[in-house]
Image (cartoon, rainbow, N blue to C red):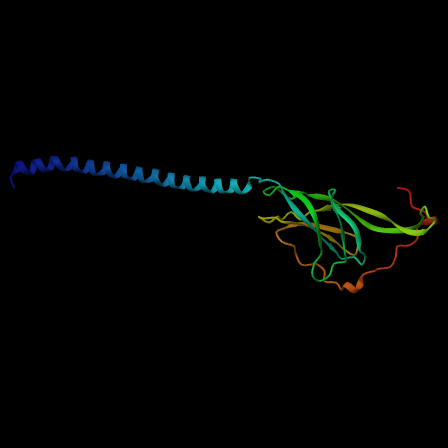
Length: 205
């Protein structure tokens, strides 16, 4: 190798080194941008999914499902003015249903609902146009602001109301009707008549 060739090689080598270094720097920059874009895109998809899940859907009518753990037939019960059905003493198989409680999936459960039901009653005499005597029942209603379990399933279908022997009531939104919380014998039911109303007269409203 001549001195001239060696001299030219010495001049070319720095240029190649600079080109290689420049290319590596650009490649590193491109890779960094791609990684940031990928992470940002993933975060955006996750945010979109979370947003869609949290977006309220159209209101639905949940079946109001009652469980009567007391020893007395409940002639009527309703939730926020809806329902109005009767409720037999709960057997091991479950309770009874009426319609409907309005709820918008994707929103929190209401903190409380107003539950009204027949808690007791009395009977009084009546006389018809033919002078025939008979007895009628007068119902005494009880109303409570009942707390609702805050846990709500993704696909709600039922609004459960549980009437306990001590007089308190619990409520929850569920996907399916649940088994009874208390397994009680149906033989506990009290089928006796209500006591007579004072003076055998219909109480004033």
